Length: 487
Image (cartoon, rainbow, N blue to C red; front, side, top):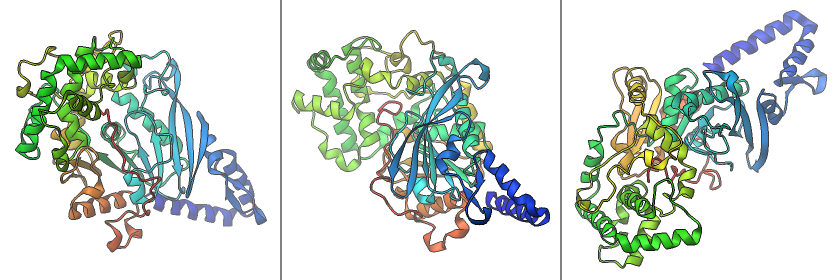
């Protein structure tokens, strides 16, 4: 569509040039005034301004740094955003983003992790498949993209979608080919929410391993997942070692406290090292499936392992540092959202009966400082889910078979058009298009290329393969944030 419009515009310009004669030089000069094309070269032929100059000509855009990368230009930028898009006169903040520039004539992928920003060059899977540009945005309230003072009531999914909308509108002046939104985990949720609130910005969306907690009070899907994932032998082995960790609680907590004192870590938010331990140990089985593989079940230590082995296993899988004040600080914006709109999972642990001391502690409110008020909006996720099932189009959801977050996935409905949900066999929270079954991978890749306006340019034999060759520096497997929601 945009290519057709560009061709029409070019034709009109040519017609105007022929009819206006000597007016063409004046038109070229006017085009250069807004940071787009400017006159130059032999005989007054138009040449484009440097891409950095064109980006920095956008009001509110400023350069943090440009980093070298072969085959691209890469910019780390700040963009001035309203603190409150409902009341833009109430102040602004600087939001970080990056632009991985390939060519204005290529499609653009709009990527977000839903968390902070990777300020080194990297490509998401859709960027490699389309051989396009990539814009990546830091989610509001993740430092340093946090308003000061921080009005936490402005941290919601609509405000974040409006951040993306303004960035898209600003950069679309330069990148006017097709756009695809994407992200993994909370980034996949973010890409979906953006489409719900601004459905006409993007030409398609690829959402990886995106949870869809429609009813925060009903979490039986997680119980079913943990009762059926993998083999009974593997499940039993994990449950046994988790129970033994709780049995040896006092010994492990003593080590935990000694480590925290040595490292200068504190527990004011959760309340104590013992409470932090309970959260870390409850994470264990979930985190193992989120990042592990059925093939690794033999590496799970037996319940008879030494306390040293158990402590090391918990630290590797769950991470003792996470529920300290220092570990939680970065993730406060996520837990605030989980406790106000996104929801969070609860799951039964009958094998731990009699061993838990703090009922209700496994909840987002436990991880957010008490001076930040929170109240839960039950309608937010129901609205998103309804939109996906009744109005969404050109959406691709990818899940991992053995990822607990896939227990409550997005589902399509009668109103979902040109959309797909695929599950990668045996995959965890790092599931991607490359890991799908061959037929599903072909369908997913062809759909993405079509949405990106590239299907006519790609031979049928190539439609299941990325257009850009693999680059070890740019295409390292994109890991969903290790502390996404809860590990």
